[in-house]
Amino acid sequence: MYESVLQNALQLPRQLKEELVAALKGAIFEEMAARPAEEPSRCPRCGHAHVVSKGRGRDGGRRWL
Image 1 (spheres, rainbow, N blue to C red):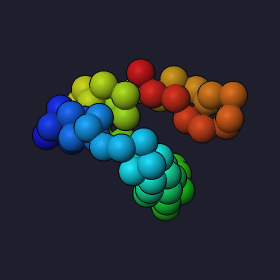
Image 2 (image 1 turned 30 degrees about the vertical axis):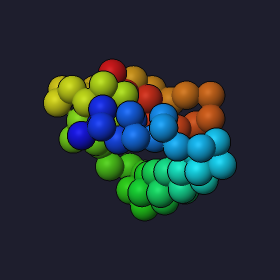
Image 3 (image 1 turned 30 degrees about the horizontal axis):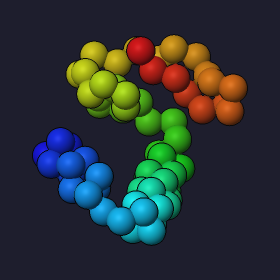
Image 4 (image 1 turned 45 degrees about the vertical axis):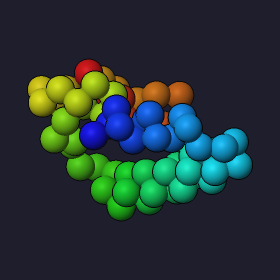
């Protein structure tokens, strides 16, 4: 599914790409802000099921390994 969404997004005109990025950022931020202390069930970066807290980033957000 990720690949098909990505391929479709790459075919959009620039204006729609910018709108999509803004909408995704907003949706992701809202979801993460609603559950700040909850450990993810999968790695946010690679999707692996084994997740370990790896401290905090420069912005104060939690990092995962």
